[in-house]
Amino acid sequence: MSISLKKLNAQPSPVCYAVFDDGEVVNLEDMCGEENQQEPTQESGELSAQEYFDLGMEQYGGTYEEAIASFTRAIEADPNNYEYYSMRASAYNSIDNVPAAAADYARVVEILENQGAPEGLIGYFRDMWATSQGGTE
Image (cartoon, rainbow, N blue to C red; front, side, top):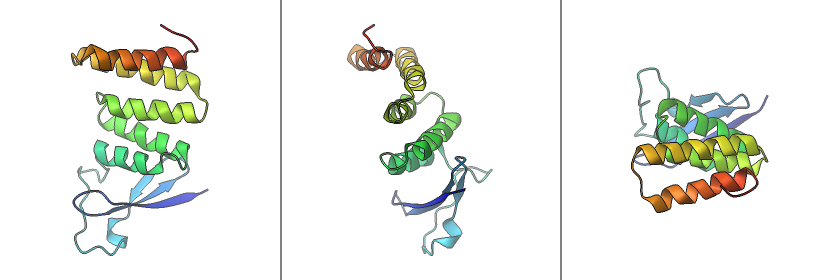
């Protein structure tokens, strides 16, 4: 079992986490020694979708599996944010999980179409989706 300790320098104050190899994220705010500690943003003690996303961005490029776990938590908390799916798709591509990346890019397109996003943005992610499937749409 591996544990990755992270300190995220997000606004308004740094946030500390422990990330376990199974994707569990534990808030370690009370152990960081910061004077202005940030409280968990939800009653359950879970991080917010944005905090999970920020954590995933910190992990991205280091341990893609940890980043995927954090992006997944962000998606669970806010399933209509296309950026969360987009970054998870990119992380999946980085570990050659093409089917998962394609599914996430398809979801990005669906979300953007439902939100009435500009066609240029939708087209970009359609191209990413097609590329992840090995061709063009």
